Length: 229
Image (cartoon, rainbow, N blue to C red; front, top):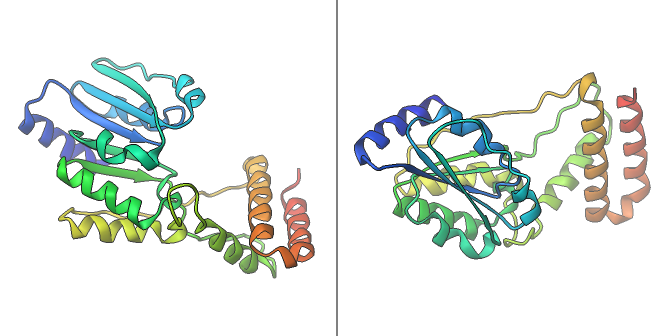
């Protein structure tokens, strides 16, 4: 956040605009809005873009002054360049690993033309570590990572390669980039979430390795047992 806040203050003063424009891609229920808006100075205009109108209807605005919010229901495969045009900051969360290299390059190009900063969080990097290793953990992880690179609606997905690809794309357009790890650390209090992750990984791995269904089912059973209670 520190580099972004410093940039924001400098640019908002330099551009002397009545409000800074932020575009949030794949906004969902507005987590980026709730986190960032209270931390950013000056009047802000946010455009929240998501293809799910129901999620956008559930957006809970943060309590902060000088904030204008527009909800836009649209498919990110169609609107990236148009919606980013004229923005000052582009944000996204849990998105880049789902997009293709071509889509990423379009995003970078559109942001560069607008001289917009870009903040992207929660990009899956393919790393999974367990406190109590299982013999099939690596097998499952590799299957999940391969599944992550299937087409998610925006072309063949970058999956675990997304962060590095973004760094290369934006640097190539003259951006100063900062790439930082932000791993989830899940413990006993997160048992429900861990079980949901196990279910999702199991399903993805079976789709990728259908002939190993029995082996993968045994792994899922062991993992569910290890986080029960």
